[in-house]
Structure formats: structure tokens, C-alpha cells
Amino acid sequence: MPEKKKCICLVPYIFILILCFSLACNSCSGSFSSLEGFDAVKITTYNIQTFFDSITVGTEYDDYKGSKSSWSEEKYKVRIGRLCSIIESIDADIFVFQEIENASVLQDISNNLKTQSDTSRCFSHALFVPSRDGALGCAILSRFPILSCTSHQIDFRSLNSSPPDMRPLLEVRIHCGFSSPLTIYAGHWKSKAGSSVQSNDWRSAQEEVLSSRIMQLKDELYIFCGDCNKDISEFYSDGDQVLLGRTETSFVHKRESFVKASSPWLFSKNNSLEGSYYFQEKWEKIDHFFLGSALEAQSFSLENKGSHVNDERIPIRYTVWNGAGYSDHLPLSCYIIEKK
Image 1 (cartoon, helix red, strand yellow):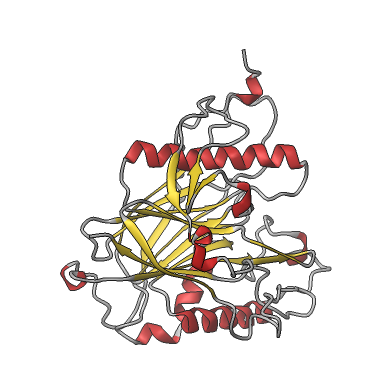
Image 2 (cartoon, rainbow, N blue to C red):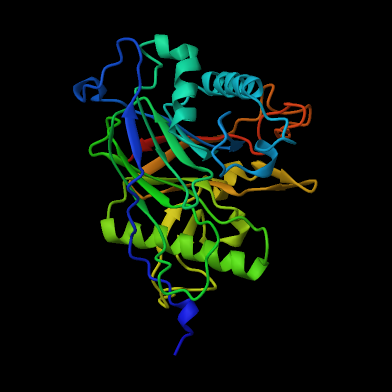
């Protein structure tokens, strides 16, 4: 009989604080018919590193609040400008962000994008979902209509102790001209801070929430985008596919239940790519795309050219005290098409 603390239910928990909205942009059309025949879609996932606004509400990290903090509205505006320059240079159709504080930050990003005046490049839809403690959540910026969004979380009610902050899994349906809506799963899994065994258990639980939801929908027109805090070498794999839900610690006690999804990291042509996160003088491949069998990755790339990286193409992390840098992660991009 398993211990009670191991029995974590994977029944989806739907957040009521999902903020989904249309953005103001000149002459942007939300018409579905205008998207018919659209081919490749470029998606970028990017952990933008503790992106707080300038208003203190109490849930911010210590470096961003209090009398000893050097964080300010001026530094916030500068940081917004830097992020917008990256977004404009990457020019993806859909951005999936991790570590964003609230929907107001997303609005500020939209208001400062020069491309919002360009009918062919503007972003017309966005959404934000907070984490459980309200500090930092995930967001999506899209040129295509967002049809729906639900947020799934591990059910903590059977636990004897308080769990760490666990960010929910986003399930977003977007109309981008494919034969049916594209499902984007967006996530940011538990960090490796603290006990390595316990943090691995929590990541395993989040992985099983993802695999469980994919199995429930039985729809292969999907892509997962996000920061898993788990290197591609730490996943079970079979060729160029990862076996999502097959983990050392199984919270549902069904190790045989898993789904196969393609990972561009495992494609032979991408073997030379070093990683998306540089920590303790070592590259890690912890930011990911996982594709359902109805999708094909036409290309996969690290966005490692520009002012957000140094001469060795290592991301320049943001530091509050001097206001320098961008993020400690590289943006990761993928062109996807629907298989015929």
C-alpha cells in the first residue's frame, strides 16, 4: 500500500484567474477565413527570467521589492524595450513566455512593439495564467485567434504537508489555419532548487499531468512549449521521441501509461546545438518542444544572435542592481507544419 503522500491525483484543476484578451493593433483581422491555406507556423518559447512590473504587491522576489531593492519603473521600462527588440527580431507567430508576473506586463509588451502597426506582423491575441502563489506565471502572445484556454494542476488535497509553488499546465487551442485548431501545452516545471529527490518527484508529477491530458484528448495536433528544468538526457527516449509520463516516480502508479512525442533536440541534424541554458559553465537543454504525430518540425533553432548574448553566444542574465542583461535562457524557436 503506497504512502499517502505519494498518492497525488492528476484530476485537472481549472484556474479561474485565466486572463485571455484581444490586443489593440491596427487593422488586425480575427477572421478565420483569412488563415486558410496557411502553411508553416513559427513558435518561440522563452523563459524571460523574473519579469516583474514596477508595482509592488508583495509577491515579488526580494530583489524586486523593499527599501533595499534597486528595482524601479525606469529599469522596468528599459527592460520592456529590450524584450520587445528581441521579439521583433525573432518575428515568431506565437510566443510562449515563462516567468512573467501578470497580464499588465503582457499589455505593456504589446503597447511597445513596433510591429503592432504592421498588419502582417501584429499580435492580436494574448493570455496569462498565474502560478499558485501569484508570483510568476506563463503567457502567450499570438498573431492567431485564441479559441480557448484551460489550466491543469496537480491535486494537492491528499498531501500531509504544503507543496512548493507549482505552476499549472496551460492547454490552449489556437486557430492557425491547420485542418483543426492547434493545441499548445505551455508549462514551467519545478526548479532543481532544494532537495534533488523531491524536486525530481514534482517534475515527474508535472510530466504526468501533461501525458495524462494528451491521452485524454487523443489529439495528435499538439505541441508542448516550455521550461521543464529537465535536460533532454533525463527523459526516457526512443529514437527522436520522448516517452512522456514514463518516470522513475509514478504518482499514478501506471508506469506503462505514457505518450510518445517528437523532440527536435533528438533529431540527428540538431546534435551540434549546445543548449538553451548556461549554468556553472555548462550548457543544458532544459527548454523544450514536444510535438504530436500530426505535426512536423521543419526547423529548430537557438536564437543566439543579438545583444542578448555575449561573444560566446551565452545568454546575458538580467541583474537588478545595475539593470544590465536580458535573461539567463536563450529563446528557442521551431517552425511547424501539419503533416499531410
